[in-house]
Length: 507
Image (cartoon, rainbow, N blue to C red):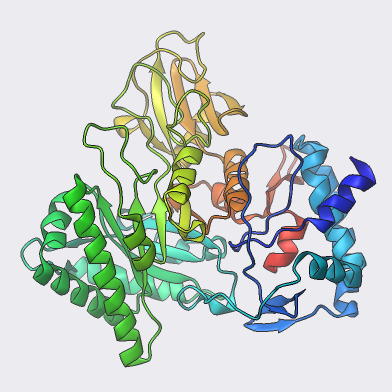
């Protein structure tokens, strides 16, 4: 591997279509497809860096300062690799690439010119108003029922680019949004808190949620109802200063309702584009929370989403890659949000790759991750792996524990915590209780996967369920700091936004 690998690495720098920085990896890694294409601006084939909408080449002085910063961080980075037992091959390529580019920017520029001789001056339009910051989606849903202990003002917005207010409902009679007096106060509070952050964070409203099928089906089937609904959403957005909407229809039940969904999305998109042109205001964002895969293959009523119309109407989809196992099956433990499942297609990776294969632009796909776990009661405490026999659900309502409560359980019960490398998921057990969930370890690897696949980003359900932002921080790509038993600060993990990606993202 040595010099030969480094030369190959530098010459094969990909141009990712998504905002995630993609770095080629050795063939011994998982064989997922890396994104290709070019989303950066260029000048005669020369790669440039975007900052505040302007293109510029890094001057030598800036390169020297960046190199100095790199050297200051390098010892901590290598120490973290040792502490977390990350394989050298997973850290070395990014470090070597970073050094090669910033130690010799002229050579690096030449290598890019040679690998991208036909570059054009085309720029990718930013999503919504996000032109002045990285366009990767790092979103979270804020459930309004958490207001008492997790108000919008308490959200650490440095970990998010978009926050969804969950939920607003639809009046089945008028097809308009229902805003109660309490909802009015919370929406104004929400928008003000989200928009107060610098850099800007987008505030969106999610409409519907679990059990919302009864309201959406007749609405989407009726042209007049669709028009009333769309007019209502635009008026609501302008009244409360909201940046867009998320349609959470769970779920269209047949091909007819899927076709109606497609009609609704196209009409909605046309309306918000027209409103933006006529008023000079930024166009409202449109997203949709969807099943983890484009085709419902686990139920008797098999149907598929209208991919072409969704791609045309939406800015992106939020694929709910969780709740893949739960209280409906109390016979065995299950990882409800595993990245891989060696024995079936019920996994995050299968769902996301299916969306891309079905035609949804990969940059319009956001990977969903849960901030809660699913619990079971083991039949035999000595059998405690994934798939172990169970006799019912464990602690929590319907066997659900938010991440903060999972960590509380692990600490109080001195639970054994396992990181399943094959599935890329975490679980813990103590006595007869078993919990499957995501933690910083699994989220780090999931975001790495999403970046390699070229996805637009990720989201969490739900803000307020985390413990001191540990999981949210891992997704965003920060160094995790904690205090040991003697009160000393310790760096314990460097997430996948390694130094090369960190530089490109302006951290």
